[in-house]
Image (cartoon, rainbow, N blue to C red; front, side):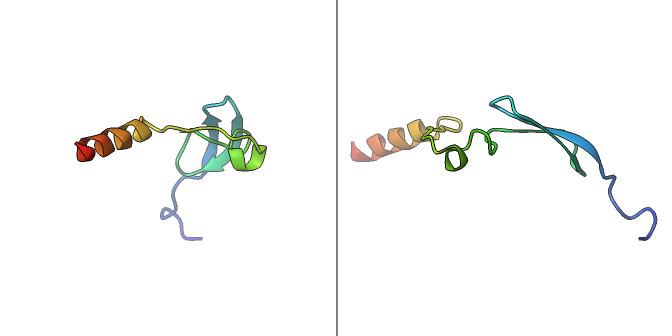
Length: 68
């Protein structure tokens, strides 16, 4: 590999909102995620409603505004 052209590849910690912590390596550094494989409905088999930033409420408000 050429010297000096590659980003630094260092240890990082990925933390999920459910509390799961994964230690890996990345060029990005430490990360926080909302959903991981421990809490995602596809992997757990449990239905879980995820409303990211009130998107459902925003959509319902726009729908009501157009109906008027």
